[in-house]
Image 1 (cartoon, rainbow, N blue to C red):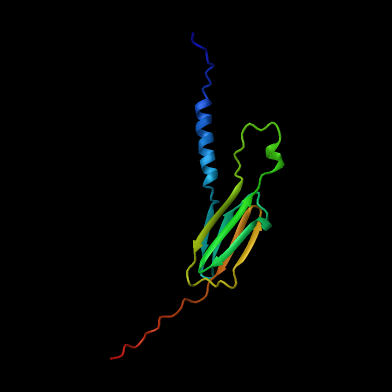
Image 2: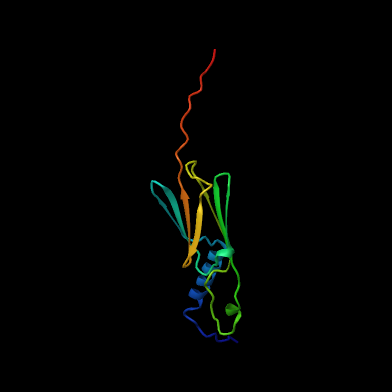
Length: 134
């Protein structure tokens, strides 16, 4: 005997969407805009829903790393949700900085879900000629 299954035209689309969202969560990287002026580089990092104390900015050997974690909220665990697409979990972005960045004067500010990092420039190291001896 054959059983009858109700056809849901959106079931496959929902399954593909859920797989896409799950994959995106595993590889989440916030959008970053980088602006360069004569005085500085400025990075604008989208981090909506993240507080300043959840963001860590580290500089080691001319590599700037931005890390943060958006934790689970009680709101998501509440009844009534059919789908949760907002990203929760940690991310990390790293950028190699040129020698012209003055790493002692970098500033970071979080406003309205955008982390702004100002990386002032210093003069590029000059070329030095080394004498070759016989």
